[in-house]
Length: 148
Image 1 (tube, rainbow, N blue to C red):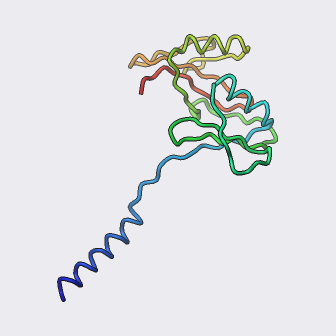
Image 2: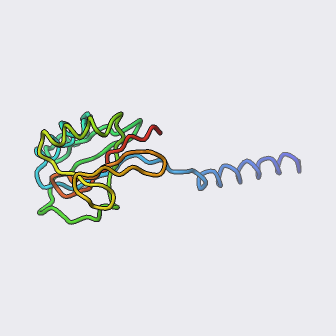
Image 3: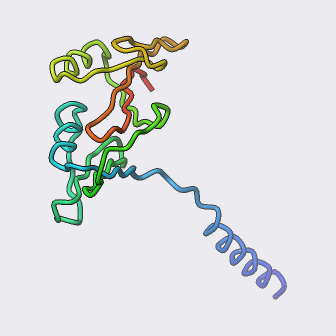
């Protein structure tokens, strides 16, 4: 009887504590935009993201796939573009920064390096190349060629 009661108590203890020991997983980032059509075209055409189904169907939301089980949610309703520090940015990796730059130049989008020098590429100590630019709402984006 003692053994049975001990086992039941241990099972209850571990079941209770496991509820509180779950590690959360990253799911999405959401940004508020002024012009949903313009911003979603930017992320589709310039960044190259694919849209995905979203549950709202209200012309105020566009969702993009940004990785395995990761999403970017775009929500209409911002009244003005905000000034953001460059250190607050979304980052996407590409095979070649130089090839990606051709797309930016063709679209007339300026870029800079990590120190804010225009038309320069940063090369990190590990050899990864990176550039920074803003989307139509002033959100910073980094593009790099990191392999991992």
